[in-house]
Image (cartoon, rainbow, N blue to C red; front, side, top):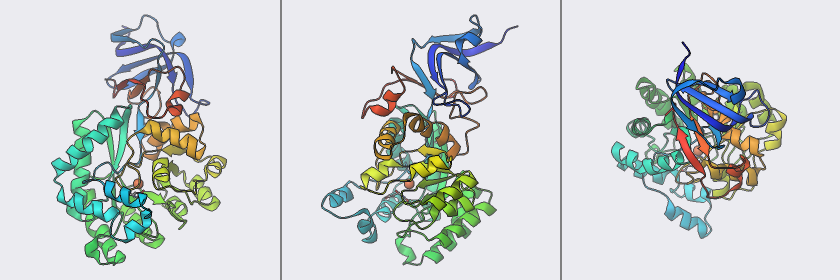
Length: 404
Ligand code: DI6
Ligand code: FE
């Protein structure tokens, strides 16, 4: 008996984003068939039985289908916002000055500590729904606004809860080494003792983190301090990733590579040696043009060096209240193109295949391929470049998560 599919999308144009195909891996006359939430077929209509049986057949009327979008770097869960600091910056204060004056990350920490888990979930939902409204099917969410065991765990637990309240896959990262809490009184090493010996083991034991992140920067933690956190993560079997070389070059890319990090993120100040190390380690470069734009950086990440070394480039929102209050992957692509000169294929791969790679979930999602989850974004567009070219326009027709 011929197999029966749950659903078949036909009369579609596919941007499969397969790594083994050039450009977008386009298929002009395409079909996708799903069963049990997985893609069983994504390819040319000519190679698919015209009379295949399905519970539901959907005529896409020539619309484009891409993989569901992946936002591989967000700080989506936090208390309050920092619009008042934005006003200060408009009067001339810099992001680093505000941070050094006790504002910045630690002001969000104070608000996050005051918020209950239900409040954190409620305030994050509109941001999550905005991402979902553009076709996101997988997003990463970091902690890092608690800086004590209880609040870090509450943030991560809120992130997991978001994944139960919406049809989306959530990957969490523990970012205890994000900033120094006020009560640490300037003693970074003693705070990191707590991160490594208390917070990280508690988070790991509760199964609240899929990865461990750190902020390596003059206003945050040094290479040596970051290495301690990564060492502790490695002992617990958790993969690492790094906020690297965002405001200065402290060798973050190379350190991330040394620990075989899934990704190194930001990278505005990364040099050739850092890029070469990432290439050898297979570390993904996650570019965050929203933060570059919002804090009015001028030094761009070395996209040409990443291309030369064959380093996969992802794009993400970095959604956070201080340096990137951005909830649009479509706008992140436009900025990746306009500010960083990434091409259309790189931008689209950045929020699909390479975002999935940066989260270590490329075998599950990120391209249209048999065996993966059936995560789709169906678009009312004539050509894929429209997704990158428009500013503030959302042509999503339908989003499909795990076949539904
Ligand atoms: N780098 C960033 O851009 C964000 N965190 C980080 O490590 C900023 C977070 C904030 O300002 O609240
Ligand atoms: Fe970030």
